[in-house]
Length: 118
Image 1 (tube, helix red, strand yellow):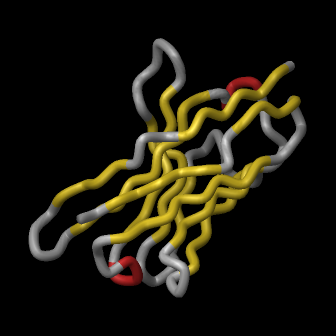
Image 2 (spheres, one colour; image 1 turned 90 degrees about the horizontal axis):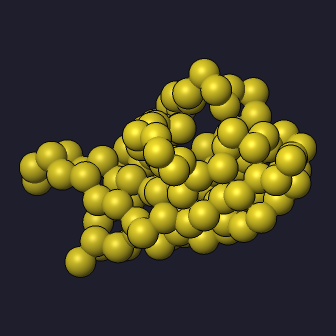
């Protein structure tokens, strides 16, 4: 079965850094696009960063220059390095696997809380 398990969230002061990890299993990780989303209280879920099977990356404008998404295909893990954190980054961060074979289907982890204090 497909599983996505996030870790690395926590409480950090503004200007600090965190690295989130998403351990994936149950599918051919290297062939699929992975992404990080976040949802803050009272707001809709938004895409933060995406990395394709060829390691092409896409970032939300709000995090460009501060966040870096990467993947380790040997470990079936996707990371989100978050630097220069701002209180506005406070949210639950979730890992998404954009499966397209044998049919399109998205899988989600339970999420990890990131809280940035001012």
